[in-house]
Length: 164
Image (tube, rainbow, N blue to C red):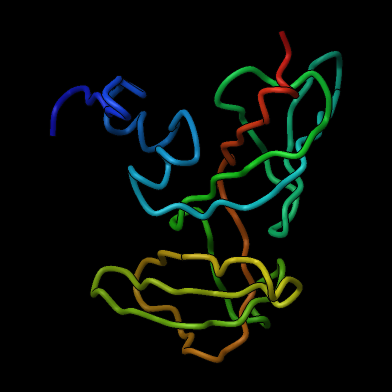
């Protein structure tokens, strides 16, 4: 792969960066889905101030996650779209994990990893989450599990909410 990649959209460069930067920091949710598998969920961005420094978090169905905004940080707490990559989600049996409960909808074993589709039990209308787990977690379709998220969530705020 090249040192840098330019992604074209409608005849213009949408984003130009190293492949790892494109994957980790796409400019919007359409590019996030184009570059790789993406769980796009709703969230609410909230600040947390401590010792004069502000850290941003996003509240989601997966819990409260550290957040970074691709673009201008909103002036106030607001609704955002959240990107969680499949490898950021960890699944466990309910007795071994904590976090929101889910049900395994499907499982695909790929040797080095397993791809699961899981549905959060608290939100049956939400899109299922795509999970990429190393190895072979002991979960089959129909099993209950817990889901947790690691790392920082990337968020996009509506332009009307972004600070000047």
